[in-house]
Amino acid sequence: MSGAAAVGASSCIGAAASCSSGGGSSSATAGGGGGGGTGAGTGVAGRLPGRVLEHIFSYLDQLPDLMRCSLVCWHWSNTLADENSEVWRSLCGRALSEEALRSDILVNLPTYRGKLKSYQHALSTHDCSRNVYVKKNGFTLHRNPIAQSTDGARGKIGFSEGRHAWEIWWEGPLGTVAVIGLATKRANMQCQGYVALLGSDDQSWGWNLVDNNLLHNGQVNGNFPQCNNAPKYQIGERIRVILDMDDKTLAFERGFEFLGVAFRGLPKACLFPAVSAVYGNTEVTMVYLGKPLDG
Image (cartoon, rainbow, N blue to C red):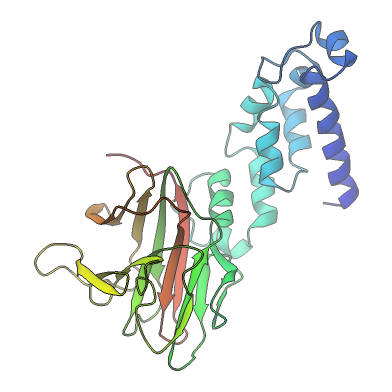
């Protein structure tokens, strides 16, 4: 899409939104009144056919722009409610790589809007160790074969409220240490030696998949899952991480089995999904799922 087309679409939407929200005399003339933005949409914006709106919205490149559009009136909100509409398909196709869309990375996200949101929450290319990078698919972290180094990465977006779930899986050897969990912005994402980086201080919480130990503040907080002869992690197995910032807990699932709450009493802070790895050329993928399903 050209820059001129994007500017034109934004201008058109901005003008229609102004009319719909009672921003001038045009609203009163077109709709017979100056209804607010949360009404049924009696102005110009409220009378645009859904297919026309979808075509205009499809020119927008940023999710926040679409979120603001959904607040203009009921009609606009209803048009954007279909998470598999042409609007979301178009934006998803521009933002995500072809590899991500065609592979099974996003298999558990049935809608285009869900896939787009997951990409926005993926592991960060800028908030990670210098010894790792995020592959072109946008979701998989690759660790370079650097000796005597432990390397990690945070997600792009952290959470201070609400309930959130994401999946993580290793696509290569674990090595001696492979940790998944949470970290604040202050937690280190690289250190010398082969250590459990997540959980090595009071700014991170981790589950070491190699020995099933829970780690925080440099100490082992017991084994997880808490059962006899707990099975070890298998390469390619998807682990679901469930963060509840309302109850301040972190829990895990494997397959359809709830493994239990691993950490309680999490601080009232912004916490980021995080991973740390030590094995050269190993790869870790993280996919944000949104709000966890109950039951």
